[in-house]
Length: 229
Image (cartoon, rainbow, N blue to C red; front, side, top):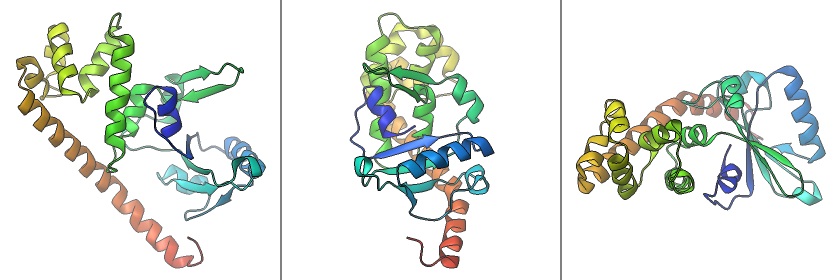
């Protein structure tokens, strides 16, 4: 659900981390625990690996020590801010098969973009690359769902203006949900760029507010477990 998924989608991001989203139920926890044991993975920070913390929205962090995965970090989550419940995400997932027959289940691009709307500086260029790559790949024969996705999520001024001119009726329908589309329709690049910055700022603030109580809880856990890193 993170940098590795972005690589598969063509928005390359170098990452030695693997971010995993899973349904935090007893049997899944058992299976994931077995996989982590096989990787000689240790929990490197609070909170501990439990459904209690996962269901509240915390991430659990591991470091692998198996010789073939030495140093790889694995971050596990079960709940993402502003993203649909796991069951819906699973129905919408993208499954990629490599030349050697290995299969990887990824968050769908719309869900991955939503998950990337964080307060972290590095995530916003990735959102831009993900949406650009998807537009370039499908622009010649898009589905209505893809057109809606581009109008809702593209962050590249020239491409937003281009798609506004190609699909004015769809833009008009979505303008109430994303008012900055009015500037795409008029071709006002300066106002559109400024509105995109404001939109990003609001999302960063929302993410900061979401994490504030969770960070407070982590600080209490660290205080109670001073040996944890």
